Image (tube, rainbow, N blue to C red; front, side, top):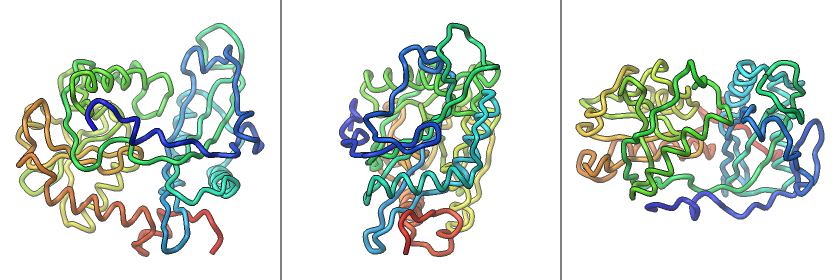
Length: 319
């Protein structure tokens, strides 16, 4: 997959219904006006939530659903968006939507909270807040068998310009610049630096380096999104593999010297990196530590580790 992710992420949409502003409606009626404030100014926030099909159990498991909605509500707080739903209600709406669509496959849920007024003016206060949730099939967002990455000339936006802790719709133009340049330059993915020149994250993924028996990842002060998959990887590395993670500043050249590297996120999952700036990472192949972490992750998200399932995996269909 060099220069084109379409075959991996853009599966055929098959949803019959979506949830919009308090009710389930047919998918073809899920529309907003071209004059919508969020469409013009990017004044919305969203989440990406994966559901994984377990063939043996005939079950879809929505992974870390609670944590995603807790983060959505934190993003809403930053954007002065007030939703009339609790986390529990958002969880119930999500499982019901997948059931209504009859989806028995890997799915991707996208809740979006946004400013719905049809006005001209860049303000956040005093506007009407709206909410949409969709559920569609999704395969791999990026290649998971070995990415070739390039360090981007586009800097990661600063927290004082566009808060990285919130998944703000408009901020993803920053990621689009970096990702598009990477694809045009023959890479699979971009790695972004802060304005100080430290490693921040991928275009839409957190990054981990494995060196000298430990994982290293940029700290929250490096304008990163505090990823839920990032948190999952850190917990699994420590509790299942016995490998600690250090959060600190990471220099660009450390990328060239790491033994192994991976990107992670809800969309990316656990995606090994085998080359950066035309330099091989380690042996230039997927390393044993990242491979083991990846295999563990894919078992857990499909509900195959009972010790994690009650906390992290929400079943869609009644047993």
